[in-house]
Amino acid sequence: MRFSYRYMAVFTGVIFLIAAVLTLLLFLTRPSKGFVRTEATVTHSELYESTANGKTTLRCRFFADYTADGKTYTDVELLRNVESKPEEFMSGQVIEAFYDPAHPEVLRKDSNSMMIFGLVLTVCSLAVSVFAFVMDGRKR
Image (cartoon, rainbow, N blue to C red; front, side):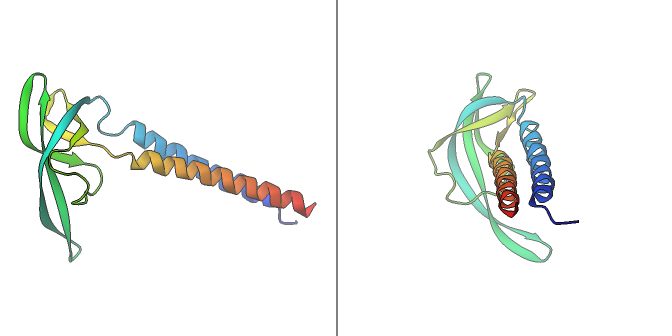
């Protein structure tokens, strides 16, 4: 049985495509689905130490003011689904955030990193498939 790049292309392409679809599904069912969009003004940030597995790292929390259902909330911690960097938001910066109508005192800021990851996987699956089909064509 001779080696065929075509089989490699199909196998690799299918694996990448499945991973891309799963990633995009995770993005579409993220926690802020069903939340209400609002504009929030970052008020300040706090650095704190976090220890896990014996390793201590410096992390950052952000706080913001926003209005939900006509009520103003002040200095509410901005919950993130990714780790924040101190330079990510500046005091006074207006950002898009989301709150749960059942619990408007909880403010979230989602990241598009899952969507970007899914797109990268999709591009990789296409690139590997094209490469393998080109290489298989050269062998003939």
